[in-house]
Image (cartoon, rainbow, N blue to C red; front, top):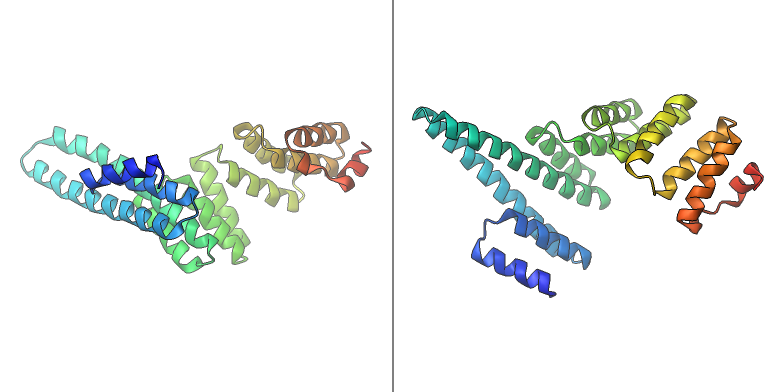
Length: 233
């Protein structure tokens, strides 16, 4: 057990309802590939958040009956913050189960995350990925659109939409979404490679060369002999 984990365990001993300490500890266990403890502490944080949100709602009712609306308002905004926190935890747990191919459980967690915070863009992205996996392509497209309506710079959703429009041969829209992704991750070589290949299809060879060279300069694992031949490099 490293020093960080030791102090987080101490923090939880002092306050077992300290949700963020459980989250931080879960992340430390994840770094060490200790997934049983990762899941254990993530689940504890989720349970604490659910409980505290319920308690906040009840307290707001009590304050409202006493006409203490200033306190109601304060608790309401604190509750919104905690709901965003809970929604993010549910998404994280959902991605864990999705990676283990437990799609049904992942979907259930993403659905709960949406109910808790309908403005969490990640929810719709992962619902789109599940729809893709189930070959429900129209539904996955709708989910990705919903995601970027909430977060226009959502990297992964823009990448998926770029690929979608590229398959549809709507190269201008594909270009728009790939560049939205590039704006949020300008040093990601895979995005530059996607743009390079798109520009080859659009016959913009000089632009394709630029993005290919950029990708390779960022990571030489992206050297692609076939693409180099097409670009005559």
